[in-house]
Structure formats: C-alpha cells, structure tokens
Amino acid sequence: MRWRAIWFGGEDRSEKSTALFYEQLGPRKSRGIRLAVRDMWKPSRNGTNQHTQQAAILFDKFHVMRHLAEALDQVRKAEYAGLSGNDRSFIKGQKHTLLSHRENLTPAGRQNLRKLLAANKRLNTAYRLKESFGQVWEYERESWARRLFDNWRASLKWHRLAPYEKFAELIDRHWDGIAACCEPECKVSLGIVGRLNNKIRLIQRRAYGLRDQEYLRLTILTCMLLAA
Image 1 (cartoon, rainbow, N blue to C red):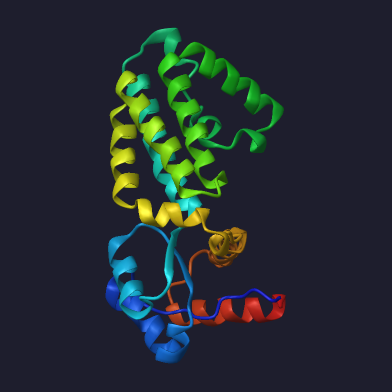
Image 2 (image 1 turned 135 degrees about the vertical axis):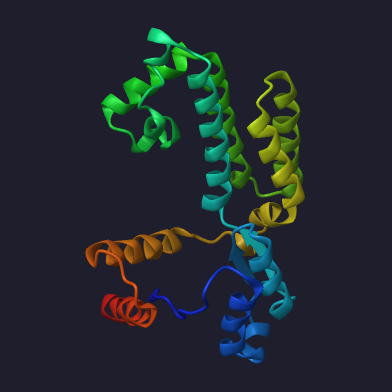
C-alpha cells in the first residue's frame, strides 16, 4: 500500500477549514469513512462530526501524550523554581532527558535521567505516572482501560500534582475518543502521520521557511508522488 498526503488546504484548524476537506471529498466518500483519527481540538472534531457522523473518533496517542508531557514539564518548572544552589543542578538542562522516551535516550541520557529521578521525589512520581498512563492503549476492552484510568486518577490526590489533575479532567471529558483504541477496528498504526509531519518540517527547514502556501502544497504533494 502506498501512503501519501491526499489533500492540502485550509488556513487553520477551524471548523470551516476542516469542512473544506469533506466538501472536496464529496458526500459519498465522506459517508464511507469508518474511522477518523484526530487530536482533541474541538473545532476540528466538530467539523469531522458534521460530515462523518457514522465514523468512530479516535484521538491520536501522540497528541494525547503530548498534553501529559506538557503537564510533566510544568511540574519540572515548578520544582526548579522552588530549589536553589546545588539542588537545581540535577534539573537544569534536563528538559529533553525528562520528556523523551527512555528507549530514545543515549546511555549518557539514561544515566542523567536516573540521577534526576533519584534526586527529586516529585519529578520521580510525575515521570512514573506519565509512563503508567501510556498503558491505556494496550488494553483490548474499554472496561479495563477505564479501570486503569480511574485508578490512575484516584492516585493523584495523594501526590498534589495540579497539572496532572487538569490533564485527568481533559481525558475524562474526551474519554470516548480514548476508549475507541480498544476496538479491534481502531487498532491502526499512526506512525505514517508522524513520518509525514516530519517530512513536511524537513521541507520547510531546507527552504528556510516557505511563505507561499501554494508552492508549499505543490512541493509536499510532489514529494509524496516521488516517494510512492
């Protein structure tokens, strides 16, 4: 199967811009969509629901975990601000180390992570909570995934991590798009989306930024055709 971008358009992430895609796709093809993978941005979701009411909504794991990573970074900043002197040395300059996946770190990065987590109890707790939340996507039954989330959220009251509590509220409001990952038909690989986004960023960096939207569109679509 050949993967490539099928459409490039819109000006932002509004409902209006989202609707442009479905208008070009047409009613018949729109009704054939069974799964729509999105982030949790409400205007974008509303635009999808209006044209594909039959489709299941699945929130992209990458975007969900990005919200949790931002919560972890807020904890990091708060801990750094509350420390002084040598106590800061374990945290300073370690944002990338803390927010990266452990398997993506170099041996030196893993060593720095171990030192950081051993030196700061709250960051240790926040880091392990982030890692344990990722298990939600491993379940094949919604009831099991929900039990993990409910237990995860209940544990927060003992840790007093305000950014995590806000994240839990966000997940609770959007649970239907998280729970969809448990359905067999929703077990899809989203790696292609990340690779496509990375390729677009690379095109922009090589061109030192592209101000002409039409030229950027043609460059991206041509690149995908050549890759196919």
